[in-house]
Image (cartoon, rainbow, N blue to C red; front, side, top):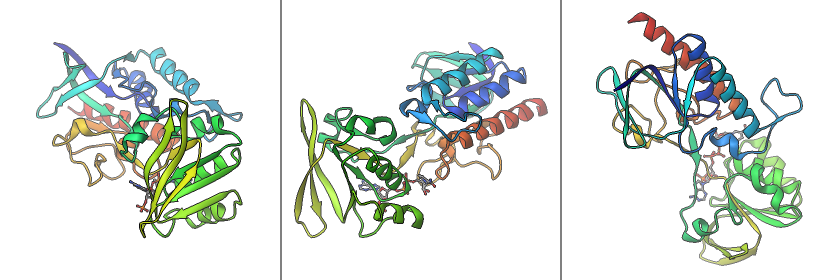
Length: 307
Ligand code: NDP
């Protein structure tokens, strides 16, 4: 069976940064990219807040750079999806694509998080045809048109503000009678004339045909229905961590995020580390994920040296 000192699962900024540090520490890491090589940032357009890029950089270009940087120091970056893990004793046993088995002295988990959807049939059918979970990626397609954003948190407010700058009108569909977002974001939304907040509404159906989204049918908490005409329907109702694989194998919190020892990347299993959005429900930034990938590689290196 193939053996490695350090196996990294996931290829966002956390996984690649862990690979850069681990390869420079001669741990010869093997990294499996997963279903979405490059992670969530490959679905965004411009990244303007990652230090070191004064002009901004495209998400895909940044992920490509990080990958090449890891490979330059010898990281073995592979296309493949980890489908099973056995952390009961060391070396850990990991299965890739249901068939390839590999033994690892240590594992760094950086599988990230994914956007949540409402779960409506019409929403699934129209995904990519007007339904999107990333306004910054897809908003431009709906320039000067009417769109809606679902959610009342900071992400929804940020996305609504961004869309308001390029679209004619933005509806915010909020299920509660108030916004959950920070005061500053709430004020920004309320002071933007082309954003209309529809409080206490839930989406019953996204309307559309083969040409894409045409509207949404909403229901107020009183039962009253309202149909809005829109061509873009954006979800901003939070994310869930990609930890299905680790259920029952690692300690997860109530929302499924991997629990790590405070200030470290150490999970409850010695030799298994976690980095990035998979353990971070709060900050979820490329730079914080990259920083946490670095922490995981350093923790991993110390663990391997101490044995
Ligand atoms: P949140 O969990 O904060 O908000 C999710 C929103 O979606 C809530 O309004 C919630 O409603 C609503 N929602 C959830 N499920 C459904 C559903 N099924 N139907 C309708 N509405 C639904 O997620 P965010 O992504 O906004 O933020 C996550 C974290 O990231 C927060 O801590 C936030 O502060 C932070 N963040 C910070 C930013 C910044 O500082 N610049 C920018 C973006 C995020 P309800 O309130 O009823 O639960």
